[in-house]
Amino acid sequence: MSMDRHNPTAGFTLVELMVTVAIIALVAGFTFAELNTDSYRLKTTARTLKGNMQKARLLAVKDSCPVYVDFDFDDSNSADNGYTIWQDLNQNGTCDDATADNNGDGVTDAHDNELIETVTLPNNISFGSVTAGDGGPGTNVITYNNNFRLRFAPRGSSSNGYAYLYSPSNDSAGTYRVGTNNIGRVKSQYYATGGGTWR
Image (cartoon, rainbow, N blue to C red; front, side):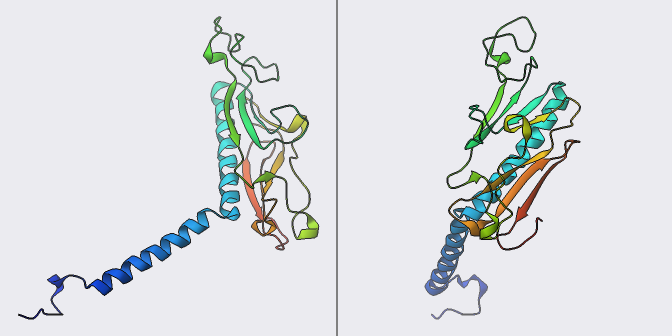
């Protein structure tokens, strides 16, 4: 008995299945390679920073308390390889742990810990930018004053400045800058190496 090749219920041949599996493997390989590039990590890091800045602003407004994004959390007078987000419950300008009554409820407990989150930058991503000589925007790192800190006030306004991100070993990945203006608007821009403009 011979099979009808035009019968839709006849199934797939071995060759068709092998071709389909090969195409899927090829697409998966390209996708995995893209996820491991410096460009992808840089873009994801910039998006995460932007989201964390927006979260910090919302928290400052919600709790009527200053919230900081601190790029020098070890007080070394330079940008660290990450940043902290903390809420200044007692408004003394420093990030305190739970050894004091920071929230004013009369009890010293875990709720007095002002640190909200610590974020470490991924491998091969740093604060800074591709130099102008290499086709980048210059040598910016963090333009926030007050010890590399972004401060969101209880009404949502903020410090004015940017944090720059790049891949030190891969200039072609470009430069991102994520920052705020005086009214607390958070924005992110990209500068393609050799491209000449922020977009």
